[in-house]
Image (cartoon, rainbow, N blue to C red; front, side, top):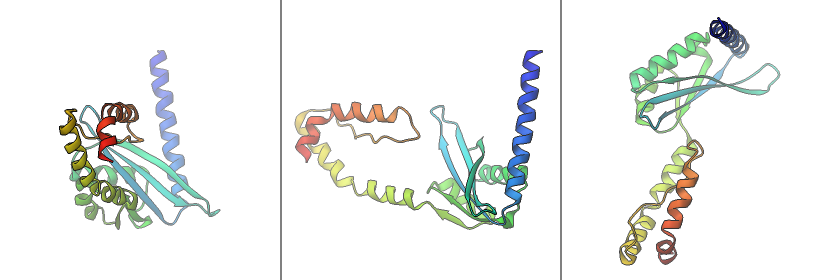
Amino acid sequence: MKCQVGRQSSNIWAYYEKKLISDIIQQSSVAQMTTDIWTSQATEGYLTLTLHYINHQWEYKNCVLATRETHTGINIVKEISAICDEFKIKHDTITGLVSDNASSIIVCAPELNVPHYRCFGHTLQLSVTGGSVIASQELKIRQKQMHIPENALIIDCVTSWHSTYDMFERLLQQFCSLCCAT
């Protein structure tokens, strides 16, 4: 019985939370969406959709609408459309969708019939890491000369909790070759 009450109360909360968000969204005449797609360590694909808008008091607001399991561009279109339907978001309200440069979202964006913008920060990051090819090649040369394992450096990522540890562990492992390469 205790478990049933818990499930019922969480279902009631989910209903009212969705209704509250829908009511708030209805007050805005335009909104933008951002989405991110990632793969878990269990190789399951996930999509999160966030809505951004300005309310009647000219305050910037945003809310995560949903996180769903999805894999392909076609499924992404279906999931984003389903989420918009759940929250009663009208297509003409959405003035843009911002995402990273993942091929799956680029393929599906035209199907959503909203302007798609690639995230400037993500594009800049790709440019910066692309420029580090020469440094990586120099590091490999030094690793061979010093008979140190030829491992690439690891960069921490805020969405991956263990990546900072992995980054420092690799830095310690490659410290000598890094000093010689600079």
